Image (cartoon, rainbow, N blue to C red; front, side):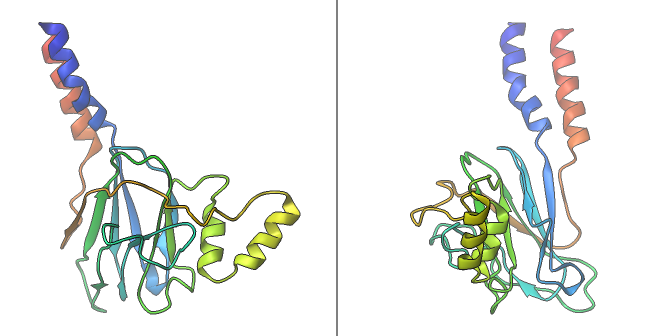
Length: 196
């Protein structure tokens, strides 16, 4: 009986190690996501905090950086921020069943073409730098540089980057992020209680 109770508690403990990664959008009035690329595991949450102007976080593909992924791809919609704002909108999604890199951009005016792009789990053959260069219309230059260095900076035109559509949510006001420490403690407490 105790063994099955421990097995039942394991998913809770796994969730305890899930991380919330905060990405600041438009920090200091710039056309950036900060950080511009992250490494995330299934179970992690990526939370975009919109700080200035009017931006989006919209899913795209490596091959078409400034184009919507599909009707089912993630899109925060426009998130306008007043100049004197003291609370900020947040858009987040959970990493679930992701098997490859995820690619995003801001669809406001020409922000993508100015390099406002974001990546989750870029790879050596599909690096963030090549994705950003393609968004900025520098594909030929990026390919020439890659040819000189002997690496491949371009992707296959059939790349769809991910077959998943993580669940997303938007919140207003102060950020409400889950606290890993509290979850870890409750998971450890649960297992300890089962062993006693």
